[in-house]
Image 1 (tube, one colour):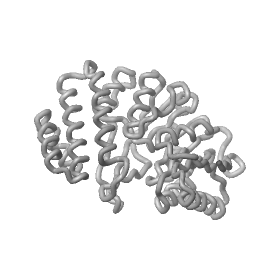
Image 2 (image 1 turned 45 degrees about the horizontal axis):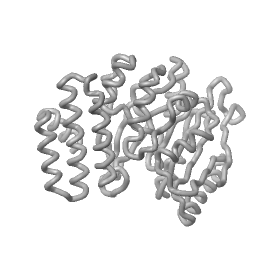
Image 3 (image 1 turned 30 degrees about the vertical axis):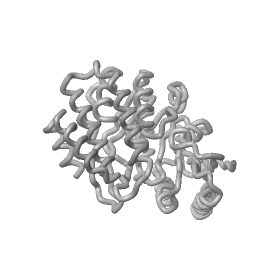
Image 4 (image 1 turned 60 degrees about the vertical axis):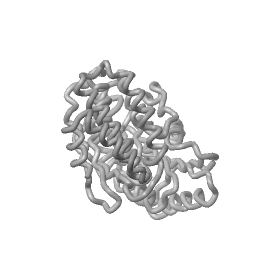
Length: 312
C-alpha cells in the first residue's frame, strides 16, 4: 500500500472559511480516461479539497500504470494525490468505501475514472450544502456517449418536496443517482453505513440509505459533470452482471410498491423490463430482448415509447 495526502488550503488560494472536500476516485482498467478525470480535478475553482485515488486493479502491471499516472499528475501540476492500492479486486462499492474511510474532508464526493468534472462542480455543490446545512445533495445528470455527444439530460425538476416520504417515491420512480453528482457530509456517510457491497445498483442503495436516514437533503439544479455511457464496449454496467443486479434491484423495489400509486408502479415495471431488454440487446440475445421489450410496452405503452425516443 502506498499513500500520500493532498490538501489544497488557504496557502494555495483557498479560504479557511470553506470546508475541506474529499474527492474519491475509484479506478479499474482505465488509463487515458483516468488522466482526463484527474486533470478535471486540477481545474476546479474550489481550492480546499483532497483527491484520493483507490486502485482496484490488483495486478502489478496495471498498478504500475495507475501509479505512474498519479505521479506524473503530481509532478506536472505541483500537487499531491493520495494513492491506495487494493491487494485484491474488491469492486467499485468497497473500493469507494476504502477511500471514504481514509478521507479527511468534512464533505465527500465521487468521480468515476471515466467521467470528468466541469470547473465549478465542487465549489457550487459544497457552497450550496453549507448554506442550507445539508447532509447529502444531488445535482442533475447529463450523459454523453463515447464520442462526446450529449445523449440525455436527467433533470430532477420533479423534486418538489424534501420529506423522506416524497424523496423515496421520487427515488423509486426516477433513480436519484449518478455517483458523480452526489455529495455527502462524511459523518452522515458513516452514520448510514457507506456503500452496500453490491456493484450493480450500489449508488441506488446508498441514496436510499441516505433518504431513510432522514438527513437534510438539498438539490442543486444544473449539471457540472460529464458522465459517459459506454455503448460500444462491455463491462460491469452491461451483460449478465447487469441483468442479475437489475433483477435483484427490481425485487427490492417491489417491497416499496405500497408507497406508489398503480400508475407509478406500472412505470417502475416498464422501466425495469426496458433496461433488461437493452442489456439483452447488448448481449445479442435478440429473442429475450423482444420478450422483455413487449412486457415493458404492455405495462406502459406511452412511457415505453417516450423512453425509447429519448434514449435512441
